[in-house]
Length: 204
Image (tube, rainbow, N blue to C red; front, side):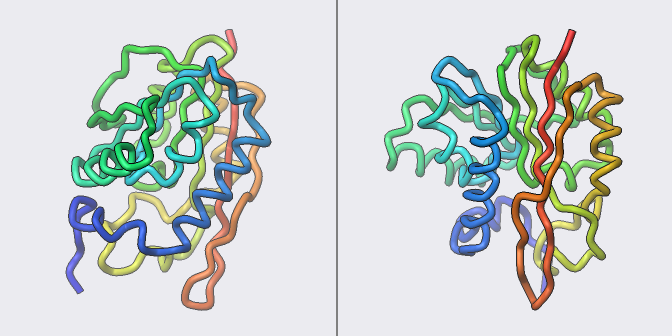
């Protein structure tokens, strides 16, 4: 089986019900742990096809949903038009090599970090995009043995993360009030893969 690009995966990406379930679980955890409001400007990095975007949009003022794959964003834009999400904009953005000038009250990154080799550098960039007392919410895989991704998926940079190391990395980037918990478990091929959500604030 050949490895597909995210552009090639985009059209059928939402057909896997486990991805819908994962997005819902992450959304519910964000709703519980982050004080969302109709005044909040949100930057979503690695938004993909917008599974989490469409859940967050009714709860906030505006979302800039970004991804490094134009194919993924095309699906998201179709979904935005179909659902009438007037407060969602999209943009191509790669946090590993681009800066984001605008300031946001919340940055969300779901299932993105394990695709990024230099996680510490990206977390520092995330910190710089937030307003004072702004929030970051990062959902990703806990440590696994490399079996989570099917052979057709792009090879990740990390096979999940140790939760203690995530906390240390967020604190090293400048974040405070770091909290992390398991919010979902993906079951595939009779294996369980826990998903964590880490939330933190930008302090002084």
